Amino acid sequence: MGFLDRAKKLADQAREKAEDALAEAKSRAETITASRGSSGSGSSATSAAPAGERDPRWGTPYVPGMLGRPGWREQGLVDPAGVLRVQARERVGVPHTVKSEIVEAPYGMGRRWSSGGLAVGLFYPLYPEHQAFAAAGTTSYEGRSLTFIDEGDRPVVLETTGLGEGDTAELRDDVLMNLG
Image (cartoon, rainbow, N blue to C red; front, side, top):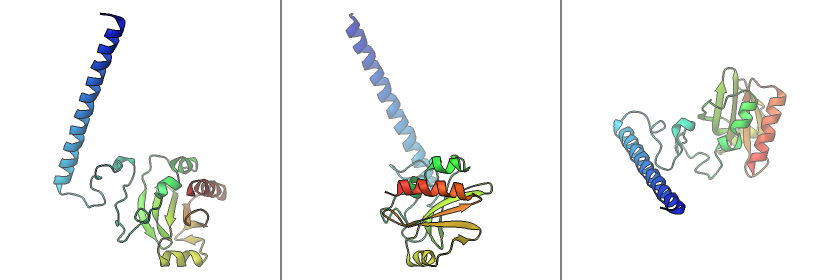
């Protein structure tokens, strides 16, 4: 058996092993999804994500309408986690391991990440009452500092707690780069 024949045989064996491993992983994933779906526990906001959705261990999954009415996804907007990126949050002291909470505030719908006395969030003012809050020019709410950013495709509200002006400015610059 020549060198090329041996290499081909090894490549075929590797491909077969990879296919077997992939089939086994798919089978396990289907079993886990089926067992979660039949458990009957948990709300729709905390149940397993449907096929094709992101793994809930990566952060709080967004479920359409979970806040009682259409949110950013239904309006075709980028997830706030994609605009206020993990690297920027981590630079100002909010660890990458912190999972977000999906909330609605008087100034919009979005995500908030909290760690100790620090918190950062990004919100879309989607509804008239959110937009009216922004128009009032309020720069704080319940101890949170608000920065209204009306550049790019869609206005957003950057919310910070426990950060200095420099850190807030750094987050604002990062958000501006990601608004598109």
